[in-house]
Amino acid sequence: MLAKKEIFWELQDIAKENPEILKPDAFFDWMCRNYVISQAVGIRSFIDADKKSHSLWRLLYEILENPGVINRTAHLRFYRKVPNGEWLGNKTFNAVVGEGAQKLGQMAIRADLRKLEDSCERIRKFVNKRIAHRTSPGQIRRLPIFNELDDALKVLDGIFCKYNLLLRAQGLSSCEAVRQYDWREVLWEPWITQDSQLRP
Image (cartoon, rainbow, N blue to C red; front, top):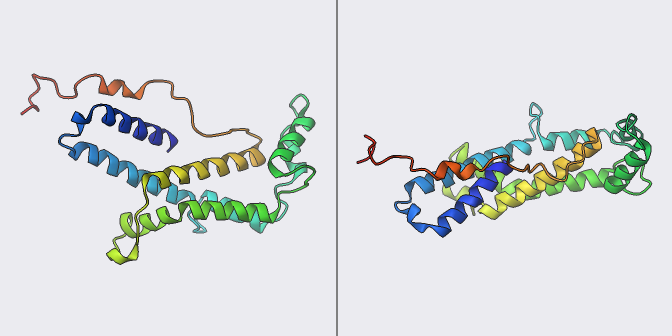
């Protein structure tokens, strides 16, 4: 999802630099609509509260229901085979949970759940009332904007990385990866050549 976001905004820059590609705008509009739908559905899947779902929201809720499941002792076990492991484990636990704290507190988990819900709520409603189902126009007052999609992704990324560190001792600052190739290469050649039968 973060890679899709990167391509989407780079595509906007390309269009700003060369507005001629927007005439006619049907293809560009189609790409933008598909981006919004796929990102919104993806974000919605992270906050699915259904008991049968495997979502970030469900993970946080189950941690909340099991007080003390994220604790210093369990976290330090991940570092047993690492040089200076106990020191490193304590340092990371202190940085995320708090200096000297023995477990991740209920208030911190509730705050993460609230942050997740608040950042994704408008998008959840949009998916439920406009993408997955069609409700009457008055059921949704304002559609989410692009920045709200980006903000929700940023919150998801941060919370995911935090619990990935606590539950697996994998210290990612972001799930955003450095692309190993230039996706724009596809745009360097005309898609329909002069001698193509598809050309009118």
